[in-house]
Image (cartoon, rainbow, N blue to C red):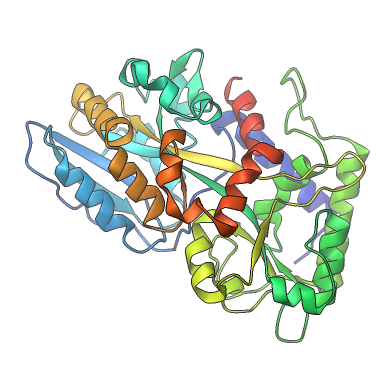
Length: 395
C-alpha cells in the first residue's frame, strides 16, 4: 500500500465532505460480508409494515429484532435483514428508486440531509413529542434538522482503543495517552507473532482519518461551516506522524478480520486494537481483566484525546412499500420510546452498546463495571465526533 500524506489527506477531506451530507461516519457494530437476505414475517396485525436493518455481527441480534416485530400488535411487521457492509448505499439507492422502499428503517446517525431534502422521510417530531427529554440531547440533536426530529435513536455505539495490560506491563510501557506514547508502546510490544497496534487491513486509513483531525485538535469544518476546519500545520504533522508509524513496522496492516471485529485482539494477533464497544463481550470472555480501554491519544501541542460516538436512528419513509405512515410512526414510538425492556435487551444482550435513553444505562450490565464503565466515562472527558457531526448535520 502506498501510504502517502496525500492519500490520508484525501481520505480525511472525503470524510469531512460526506459528513456534511450525512452526519458523522459509521460507528455501527461488527458487520460481516454477504448479500441481502429474504424477509422474515412478523405477527398478524391491522396493517403491514416492512422494516429494514443492516446486518449486526453480534450473534442473536436478528432473532431479537424479529421477536420485537412479532410482539407489535398494530401491524404485521416484516423484517428484512440486509447482509453486507454497503447497507447505507443500498438504502440510498432503494429510496431513490422508489421500489421496495421499507416503511421503517434504521439509518446511521438518523436521516441524512439528502433524505430530508428529497422528502424521502417523514417528520417524527410529534412522534417523539413529550418524550424528547428521555433521550441524550446530543444524540437526539444529531437526528434533528431545522427544529424537526427525523429519526428516533435506537442505540449508541462508540469506538476506542483496547490494550493488553500484561503485555504492556511486560514491555515496561504505560497505556498511551499521546500518539508518541502509542508509537513507542507499539514498537516495544511488537513481536514476530504479534503486531503492536491494529486499526484495519487498510492500515487504518478508513477509520482513523477523522480521528487524526479530532485528536490533533481540529474539527472537520471551520467555525462558520463554510469550509474545512483542519487545514493547519498541526494536522499535517499528525498525518506525517501516522505515515511514519505505518512505515515503522509496528503497525499491523493485515489481520484475520478488519478493525470493526475484535477477533485480531482476541486471537492475540495484536497487543492493541482500535475497534468498537460492541466487541467488549468477546474480548472480556478471552482476556478477563487483562485488558484496558482508552480514547484515541492526542497528537501534537494542540491535541486532545478523542472518542467517536454514533447512533443508528429509526426513520419512517414518506412513501414506503405499504404506504402506511401513521402505523409506521406508531411502531417506531412503540419500539424505540415505549418498550424500554426491549431497548435494554437490544443494547445489552448482543454485544455491548449504550442505551439511547440515559435513564436505562443503569440497567445495561455490560457497562456497569470494569472496562465497560470506563468506556462510558469517555463520553464526558474526551473530544468526540458527536458535536462535530451535529454541527455538520445543520448545514
